[in-house]
Amino acid sequence: MSAHEGAVTSLLSLRAVEGGYGQARILNGVSLDVRRGERVAILGRNGVGKTTLVNACLGIARLHGGEIAFDGRPQGAIKHFTAARSGIAVVPQGRRIVPGLTVRENLALGAAVRRPGRWNFDTVCELFPILRQRADTPGTAMSGGQQQMLAIGRALMANPELLILDEPSEGLAPVIVDELAATFVRLASENTAILLIEQNFSLVYRVAQRYYVLSKGAVVEQGGVEGMSIEDLKKHVAV
Ligand SMILES: Nc1ncnc2c1ncn2[C@@H]1O[C@H](COP(=O)(O)OP(=O)(O)OP(=O)(O)O)[C@@H](O)[C@H]1O
Ligand SMILES: [Mg+2]
Image (cartoon, rainbow, N blue to C red; front, side, top):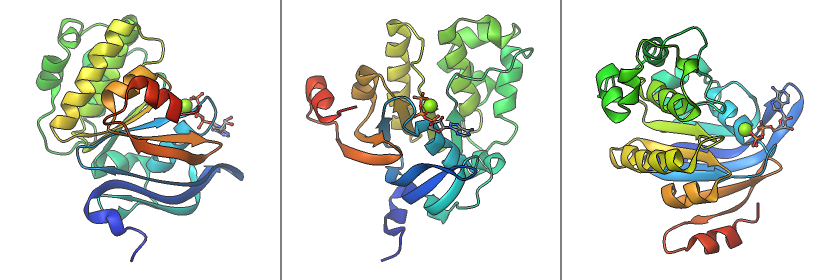
């Protein structure tokens, strides 16, 4: 069987991925899968390589070994500017709203490389009405929660099949995190797979169907969330 035996059902497939920056190896053989419309979480402490994993998927971090496939196509040499075209969009850690650009202009950036689909300025503003109200104000003038909505909206503008979210709850009030949880579940039900990188158990518990735990650049634990209580999840996930 090929390294990508799961290609028929896997949207994103990582097999024994090793990689990092320059000669520094951060990822030590990561294998994981995200299927179409699935909600998958990656948990792990600070510095274990979560963002590096995202960067490897985007071709920003160097791949030393293993394979990354998206939609059945090996992406070993994917360049990040083609990630959006292939159907992957990322909400980066820290949101990275571009200073000096309005909300509308930040959203337009997400549409620079886009696939056909239902997301555009109007539909994103239906999802997050605050973005229409603040459309002509600088993106960075908004609250943290509003900026996160902008970062998610910007990613959706590309009409991705997979939305990767790198610690979206960081620094946000619980009520905003609740809203985001509902949004992620809804997006997946509309067939946008969610790869949620988080340290917030409660968000993972509410959103994810399956989880992987990353430690020192390797998956040390994985499982399904269904049928578990949040206490069970915390016990299983020794992060
Ligand atoms: N651009 C870079 N060049 C060299 N090393 C880096 C770079 N970015 C991160 N690292 C190192 O790679 C390791 C993993 O970092 P990474 O950002 O992937 O962790 P993380 O799990 O996302 O952590 P956090 O939860 O704090 O975001 C760390 O030791 C970090 O210092
Ligand atoms: Mg990180």
